[in-house]
Length: 310
Image 1 (cartoon, helix red, strand yellow):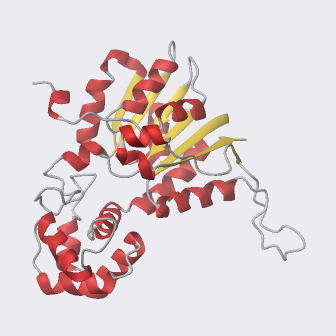
Image 2 (cartoon, helix red, strand yellow; image 1 turned 90 degrees about the horizontal axis):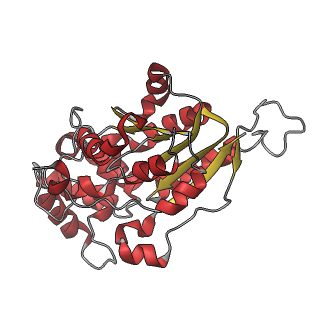
Image 3 (cartoon, one colour; image 1 turned 90 degrees about the vertical axis):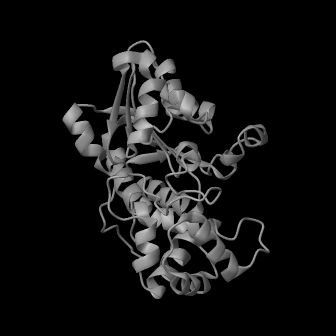
């Protein structure tokens, strides 16, 4: 049985907007740093033909397997690497893949990962408390939940989940140890905070754990710096974020790199020596249309930002 028949259909978010923002053209060189199911990558390869090339990177080996089948019609134009995007410069150096005309980051957890009952990303199924993008790493959600102190758990849930009742949840987790499945954790959180919320009471805690397990913000910050340095003049950087912590990090990075001076306003003469490397293409984040949200509800929280290498 083919791999694609065993997985849910991947729907790329803001697809036409991404292609337009990247200014994809025939013969161009592009990187999809989170290739996932290959939806964005296939569209980039289609528009960059003839002569275009795409480097697809994903830390999840299952995603690479799915993308390899999805992109097989494009032959050698698609180069797929199972690696962490925070190693972007090293990957490109080894392949001699630079300068780049466009780089895409489509962040967060994918529909493929959410639908896999073995991965523990969702509380829709009773799954092991895993939440790793990279299944070879040691740290799992279960390790954090069953071994971290109450204060450390509260800090993670508050910082990465922006959960106002983080201390109540952390206290309840410690009292309920050991925890081994997603439904156990969801029930513990629900008892701690109640059910009178617009979203499921465990949503923020699951987000926080996933971000902590995968060090998502730290990896993203490192990768953005490398992506900027790899872009050729006029190359585009496109980032799609799905929660405010990611989006704020991206916004701050792009704004900082679009300014010539980072000195405090009261400094009479620039002493930092910083020079802008980017030009902002859109001032505010682009969001999906109502039609796209209706067709793909998971797209509703997407925020896309675009910048161009000077």
